[in-house]
Image (cartoon, one colour):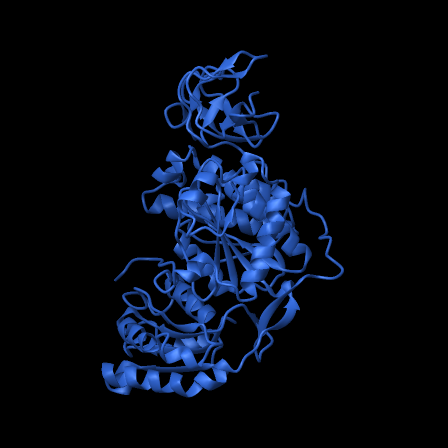
Length: 506
């Protein structure tokens, strides 16, 4: 195989993956007489043997699809000759489970320890709307506290409006309102928010009294809540909110960072704008960083359930118990039913951008996405925005849409996020800093102002997955200790709050 042009990820694969653009007529394998029959773009696949119609096509030693017509060795494999169909997967619960080999002396970072013992990576104040009807006043309150107003409070990272498009037009009970209440509660009590205002209109389905009661917020020490209707209108509500925050600024500024174990880090794992390099470079590198974090007692959350579809059997093998593995399978079945009811199907993914980058089927995309989760045991599976209570590698159910998924992870407790991208996502998140990992050199150079780490060096020979994983962990520690990520420098994060909205809008 001509390693200057392509790689084979496993000896049982019947595809090569291009690591640069390959012209037509290039000899890739002299021994087996494999020559490209067309131009192959970076990240795309080339057949390494003759493949019959309906025969399995394998990458990572896993099925990524089936040939829709005969494929000759050296041919480009993509949407024109590869399709997806159902096939049996053996979940083999707990087959690959092992005990975590914890570090005797965990690494540390400079964190902010709250009164309740939780540990923050940032020190924000939140202004949370219970319903879309109070979104405007929340934005106006937060807007008042610009850099000039906060210049006398250098330890406060900002005042963040948490507003959304739901909270009413739904039933006052049931799963849809449970989701939004879990999300709002998770943000209100998030360690990275030192204080929170919760503001409603007054007549919405998502009543503040029920939200506070159902989520156990009655005794939460840093929360103040009220409504526009009870306060007497828009301007009075804005003035009241500004006045409250002005009063608590000195106390919220009175914090200092101290050395604490990275076991206090909960890392949200995301990929967006994936390409054919994602499963080769950034995702497995992040997976190695996850392994190191877990061995140091930390927690990592894998999500985006539609984007592990077809690869879930790799996770059930790592489950700590069969019950945990079954919880993941139940989420997969829920999604199959959910998409079917709405007239969709699970293989509607990948996106056009994913396909342009070389990903053909959801099976292929999922296999690369799962690599973000490393190799450590799967300790538990959570529903969307449920509070994470287990240490180690866990899974939280969510859509594949990045802002919705990260919103759930942050609500679950993620105080830092790592986000891999091959096409060039520019996402950021408040209150949890987001670190962007580029899968290829071209993206890192072209969109350098948004990318924190270049994982493309793995393909170009400048680094290994293990070395890049170590680099990612160092970046996680420095960012958690206060160094701004690229997305923070650009002040992303206020518009990216996007709760998962279930059910009909009534």
